Structure formats: C-alpha cells, structure tokens
Length: 217
Image 1 (cartoon, one colour):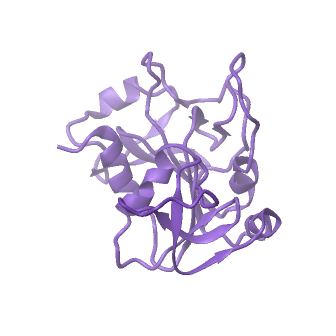
Image 2 (tube, rainbow, N blue to C red; image 1 turned 90 degrees about the horizontal axis):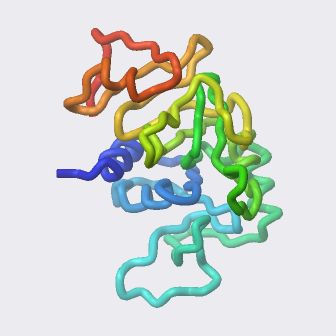
C-alpha cells in the first residue's frame, strides 16, 4: 500500500505533460523526479542554473557543483544546459517555465501561498519561490492537508506571511485535489475511502463539491 506522500506524488506526476519545462521546489516536490515516466521528454529546471537535471542514480559519484533546490546532489540528462543564475531567473521572469510544484505551510481559497516564513522561527529568506509563484503560468502545491497538530492548512485566508498572492492553480494533498476558481476551491478528486463530510471537517476553506463529478485517487 502506498503512503500518503507516495499517493500525492503519483497523482502529481499526472500534472506533467510531455515536452514541458518543470520546476520542482524544496521538500516533497523534489521527489517528483522519481515519479515521472522514463520515456517522458521533460526538462527539469533548477533556479541555481540548470535545465535538464535528473536525480543521481545509486552508485553515481556526486558532483559538488550539481545540487537541486533542496541541496541534494543531482546530475544531467542528455541535452542539458548549465548557465548562471541571472539567466535562470530570466527564464522564470519571461515565463519560459511551464509549471512549478511547491510545498506550503498554508494556502487559501483565493489561491494565496505562504511557504517561506513562520514568525519566531529562522528562515533563510523568501528565495526564488516568490518569482516562480508570480511568473510561472501554472503553480501546483503539494502539501499535507493538516499540520502535525491536526490544524487545517487549507484556509479561508492565509495567516502566515505570503510568498505571493492569487498564484495557485491546483492544490494536491493526501485528502483531495482542489482547483482555485473565482468562486472558491473546487474539489475535483477525493482520496479513496474518504467521505465528503470528513474532507470538509479537515478543511477551513469553503469547498465546492459536485459529488456526481467527483473523482477518486
């Protein structure tokens, strides 16, 4: 049986289209590497200056100059390009990246994203997430539905400092797949075995649910 994170990543891999340029954020999204089909022609972008990266295979010697956004060693696929960070961020600012996957501390029904700062705790800074969230056409959030205390992370309104506003396209948690719409969060899929009532109870945001069209994952 798949764990919650494995189910989320398996579902998230279906968001990627052959031929896209994809950016993977810190944390869970970097593991999406391992869930993309081997025959899919996707260029993974790293904002530190690499297009066409892939995970380092077991037994491959690490290259200390090749790391992903989370600091893990990576390597390159055939046709990869290496460049400076100015060129990398120019790609982002010109909207050359098709989709980015990010984690989150909080998201809300207006599509706002908070994923860089918890007051009172150290943060290295907002980083490239701010520009990715503003400039990439499609932002998919991968996060747990609730925090370790059981509190909802899918809110009516974010309480933590925002990374960017009205930037999220889709949210994937272990409980549901939700799209941000002008009317609110539309639930398009719900986890196998989970009731609609249980989903609503675990969520602070108002959910739009048409049970006749609701998929399962």
